[in-house]
Image (cartoon, rainbow, N blue to C red; front, side, top):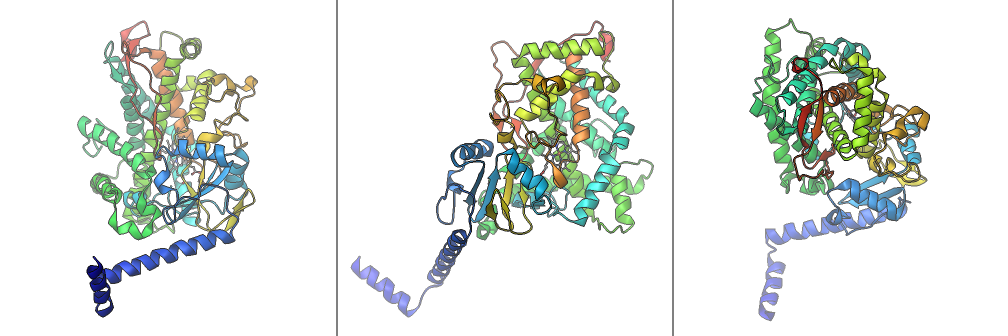
Length: 516
Ligand code: HEM
């Protein structure tokens, strides 16, 4: 042993091997990074939080169910915490006053995004709306989206499309009468079809839908869910940039595979468009803007990224909200009865729900808000990032910190909400002192607030109300014998139910013809 050590040292002295050179350079580099980040931290007054290990920070200790993890830390350290995940400083705010500071008072500073490797590879280098940095290009993209696709006038004009999709869903559920229906899949399919029809004039089962068969559609549902999980998954490459090229968890590889699946479809759609100028939909508008050489500077890839943004942001969020709402109503039959009583009064018993009925359904609207309170589909918003050094709650926040607004915790804060864990739509009824997601007190912000606020809020509201009203007016639902409701969640960029909601539907309306 003694000889071996001696020989090794001698051989190093004489002629250090490349391995030894690489190893020592790496070691010195990492040591320098650790000392540098430690000194940097010492100079600043950062929010409190767990320190973690050198280099890795708290990365080895985090629970992938981040909404539980950060809410637990807030209980220990207070409403603003900071921690290093690897080399990245992450700040999480969990009170309405701090949310106001991020999203209103310092909105212009905190409106950038911190792009994970998964999104970079999924979204064509992050050229979509959700990951474009704050600035003129973002303002222009949001303006096009709200004016051409998601604004009041356009949404009014495509009311007929919503009717087609919702009625098709009712028919599909009716066909499962007495059998098990997977409501999660049905609701997702309805939203997916609606969004894709608005985008390029075709959902599943329609000509021009890029040839998606029923089997391929189910694969797509899984892929979109997978994307949301991937995008929310802590990735070593995001937190330890020197590991980026190693892709230790395979997240980059998986993201690229998903991107290629979509890319094939988008290429097909765009070439179909070139030979078909009769239809006018969102893709036409984007292609026209690209052709006109508009200052926003759309490329083929940025158009694909925007399409993907709408498919992912638009389908899962709304359908997952509906799934949680029905689950809560199955757990609370009195609430279900109240909703159905309201439907029978407003709509009647001898016809199907029309979208024009929806504005009278105040109790169902309260169910929508209460579901968004307890199960916000985007529990930390899409993480924000600051374009310059700033402060929050009096603490220093260095430039490019990842800032997460813990909507999950804010909307369950016992100081704001009485019995916060109880599902109680009445708290949103006006004479019960109700709040609304459009109000600006920052205690209820499922769609965010400020310049990065969700652009699909009105569509989500319309679809939730119309689809839920139609389902609950048309059917009674029950679980299979001996089955229990499960409210466990899968954390990702979009929060989803862990076990899909499968129920047995029984028609409520007097004649079968109404369903077809
Ligand atoms: C219940 C349904 C929905 C919820 C709860 C929801 C919530 C959110 C939230 C919290 C954000 C991030 C806000 C922030 O980072 O500050 C967001 C962004 C976004 N949402 Fe939604 N959303 C829903 C449905 C939709 C729909 C239907 C669409 C479009 C079809 C859509 C499109 C977008 C887009 C494009 C962004 C990015 C905006 C930006 O970064 O500037 N969302 N949404």
